[in-house]
Length: 465
Image (cartoon, rainbow, N blue to C red; front, top):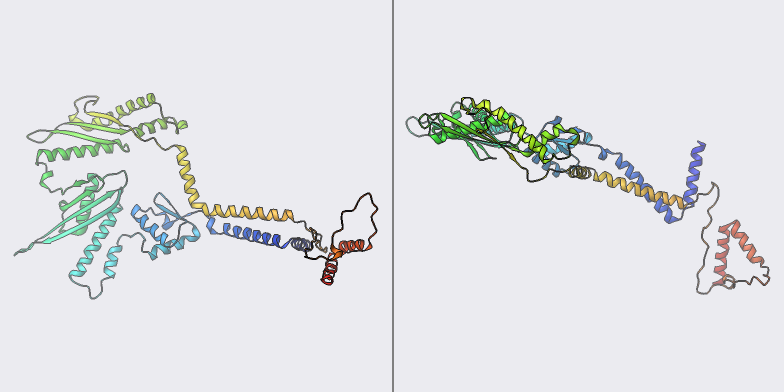
């Protein structure tokens, strides 16, 4: 324990040797250092290391509701990565409590039906209970369709109409509005799945041909399959349009090129409406050719290909596209190479892709937005350490057991100073100086005991006044 006593004694001597202003500065700096270290050691600095709700991926609509609940609860230290919410492990319970309080938890399958049944008391019966059940079924259909691949949001509306008369009949129709995810569209296969799902869920009164599907992104209508305008023996225009859409979807699935646009022109026989020829036009974005070039040159992935190299890749990819599409034509193919029936063009990008500097800048700004509090506290900690270091450098500690001596001279300012305190004129070095025993005695008292000298001076001043 001797070393502890020595350290304590030295610290005490150091504090006693400080002027009051220096002590205050050192105390404030020490408090700031301790507070900053305590804050940085808390969970505020911990990285988001837990994905909320077991890493479930949420849609854009669900994320908006969840982030609104977090904002109302004052929770901001989270991040969204590919539809998943990452939070600190120690604050996971607070985020879940915020979702529960604002009723922002994503709905589960069967939740609307359970709420409808549980909310039906003994006063709810007959037509009112049936209406609640139908609303719950429509909500369940919306939730189910929204979870289909490529679908962002869905809206289901089912209408029932009963005819009057001796034999009343119930006519049921439905409309489903689909909002696909960004960059995607609704195809015939998805529309058929939705149509049969809605019909089979509602019951025998609703037929698949009575369900109309709408793509909100392209304003495309998928009418009822039982409509006369789309039947095999329908008009020339309706049959032509249906076959062209089928060819577009078929070629798009075969190519699998992101952003590629396919247009088809089908010529029909005037009598039988059978297809006689099919001409296809495929527009490929320039980014696809650049991606092919980068895959062949992995070391130069940041740079852009030159015009001649890009032109060669366009020719190679165009030949591959014709070779992939031509077998689909079958008996409708008129040429071996398919150059006339399958036209391939390029969609030139108007805007240059984002450079690596822009990507790094966006990442840096995102990191600063997430950790600005920690950086501010770290800067405050460095400033406090700098102040404390400067304070200690200006202070010279004394050995334990010694008293502090004034570092500056003691000056007395009065209107009428006593004659003994009036400063003597500067002595002439050429003249011998007179011996003054009082001056020597006072100087010795100051050297030996500063407090006693101050007491003597105080007494002299009091007597003089």
